[in-house]
Image (tube, rainbow, N blue to C red; front, side):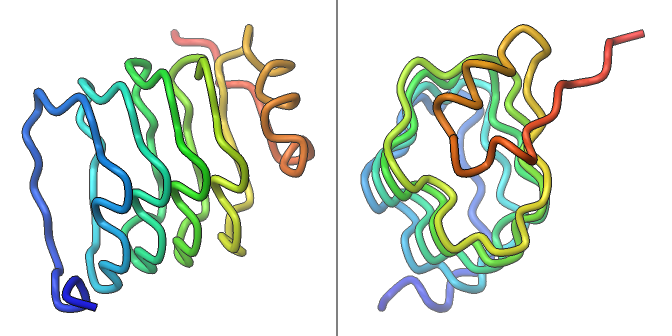
Length: 130
């Protein structure tokens, strides 16, 4: 695809919406950070971004994550959810074989285990802020 060569993408800190397949197939992209303004991450938005994330923080602003949003993010090892997500599609972390820990706010553990049943074993609560 046309996205193969893209290595770095910088987005606005006011960005609220990441559209369907927006970064799909950006295989060489590294170190992408979701801005703290994002509310919606649509279907397959980062599908096939092999190297984009090692550790991914999903800001508390995010309300919706579409199906397969982070599918095939092969280097993804850790996901930190900063707050609850109202609606999640299916298979958002499908084929993220290195994913070994999902950190969620203490009060949301059960909700995330219901939303992400396949990952319930690796969902852990965030440490208390000092």
